[in-house]
Length: 429
Ligand SMILES: Nc1ncnc2c1ncn2[C@@H]1O[C@H](COP(=O)(O)OP(=O)(O)OP(=O)(O)O)[C@@H](O)[C@H]1O
Ligand SMILES: [Mg+2]
Image (tube, rainbow, N blue to C red; front, side, top):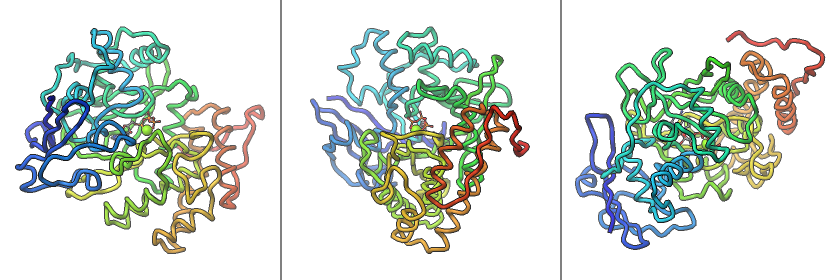
């Protein structure tokens, strides 16, 4: 039998035991600690409510372990790094259990849950060079094992998501590898490198999306383009699961309701119902609703259940997290990962109104949300120009946005052809 203790790590000086995971043969169990149940928190209200006794995990269509802990495990990029590293050290990854993987992460997790006993990892907390790590991450994507594997693993092993990325500490121009606690003056950020199928200027594109999202009334953490000495630019976003070294509990939509992000089975109606039920807050509902409209208008079709999340905030209330991972994407088979009342290919005004009314929003609220998001999204070209997106990428995305806006009967932005050599007017940033 393997056992692993789960802690809620609030800050370097304060943590408490949540409970114990156990594996007996192929079976996985979890039991909340009696001390936790004295004053319980609802960390995963739908699938793991705080109740005494053992709960056996049985939801294998979702994954190998309860969503609460699955959200600590990296998938795409982070998992690839972990496997490479372990194999290089002679460990057969086929024989590893999820508990082994959680134990390998230890306290290097996103959110607030940490795992003990932790398997000791190689320490690396020094200054890092983004250009170097990006080059090394490219090698890894191409199938080679890079020299910087331990450093990359330490800096980028735990977040979910497909693209290469690193967790860093930022203080003015200094960048530290930053998975664990940071020196006092540093802030926690994520910096994303380019994936295999990304635009050359993917960093500037995602940065522009963050600008138009904010203009659309969405809440997002601070974002920035990090430029290297070689002129490459990478998208960075401040982490909302950290405030200095204080940690916040974050749970993805997928993890909360046990919906597998690889199977597009969830839809926006379910998402909005969860927002309302969990947060009991109409402001969060309105935020989630605008996020949906933004994804439709701005062609962010990678809107799967791990790209929406909830957190327990400063006041110990559940809230919808700030938006993240907003960028141009075509989605599975050209459709949105989550559909709007069955429409995934070209949803528009009609579906938004129907869905909004079903979830209890007034016609005026719906109309105002559409107008506000449209006002932000129609700024794509001017913001893209200021952010240095190439003319080709800018026009290509503008064209796709125009198609989406036509489903709202909203006037298009005219696309100025790069060959005309005319400058777009853009806001100063
Ligand atoms: N600002 C943030 N603060 C805290 N956590 C974040 C933030 N942005 C992203 N994350 C977490 O990191 C994970 C990876 O980020 P993101 O979704 O941007 O990467 P990605 O590789 O582009 O993902 P995908 O595979 O969905 O395209 C997210 O699923 C989320 O859990
Ligand atoms: Mg993502």
